[in-house]
Length: 488
Image 1 (tube, one colour):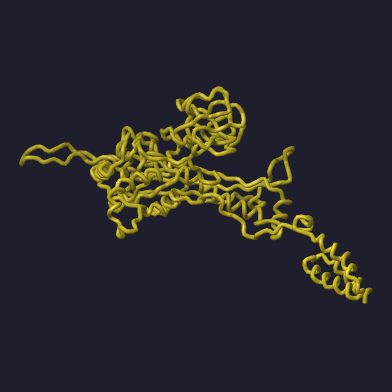
Image 2: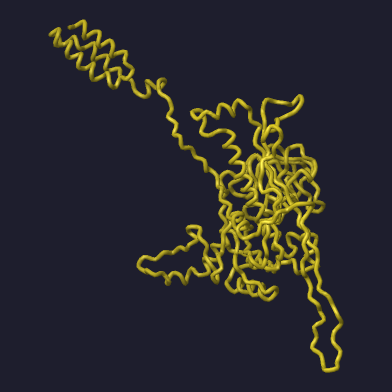
């Protein structure tokens, strides 16, 4: 009996599921003591049971448990303005060198109330101009990736998702994010302006995000690891020296570069994104490479003086009605703009666009009145549909908040009258060759066992009749939170 119990106990001691072996070993210990009629015989087994392993002592035997659900959407991929523009615009296939269309600008001046047998005015003809639409190109690149990592990540138990699928799908989202940014601005590609001469320091003090005057949140569109250059606003030339953004301050006022900036950089220079650290010409920067956005399309020459080859200071028909330096926003001010649209071109405001901070000012216009207008005054709701990012209205016209829109601006559109168009040569495609999507990463001496993929778009947004819009600039009193979309 004692021999059998001893052998069974030894087997249990070798059993690595200790939590199951432990109760059985206790029973064997008691049986041993009974068989020998000696309680002290149980002591060796009691001592062994006292050394039971814990997750700390047996950590070397444990593995991590991976939840198969990974956080894919850790960045902000909402692109509301791009969605609005594509919904409201008519898509046009583009081919050839450029898009040209005729724009009616002046009436026949001969209509005349005359006397019987009296003279009437000289003959005249209709006037017009040809407008040219250029197409802009956008590129994205994946890689370099080695075949080793692609193959390793293709195993379902070795990666959250295949490297190819992850990078290809995410790049399309990243391109859409840049499109969203460009769609709010004037096509110049200006990220911000230098606020003061930086000398040769590693600190850039900046303002005017997107090239729109303002002292708040100047580093709004600067991103860590961007290569940036400085454009001389007087000549459009790239100044010497390229800098890499190392960090952006939470105050919104400064950015830190990886090395001292070039002494040639000066106050009010345009800061633009450049392709790589070896760039020496504005050709290889984003300056004047963005497609036209809302404040370039709907402008009076303040930001985009040349509209498709037509000087806006000479031809008012391609200008929107702009009220500068508005100051305090009011319902009467918006009504003035809406009335001006009717007077100038017979347009009717059907959509308004602005930054979230301006939408909050619109909400404040009725805040005092709404306090007593709730259906249940015993349980009042102080908010509006905007709290859940719905559209509030003015005169039943929706006011849409766009996170990238310029501060201090409110844009009103007659969407149908403005004739928004999206001219597309390539709506988005992977560049291919004999190897499919892949291109070698490096040639000759610099060749490495890796490859990369390229993605391109060619398009431009356009308003065939920008007079069907109004814009209020310089609205004051808005509170701007210094918050960046995650991933930017």
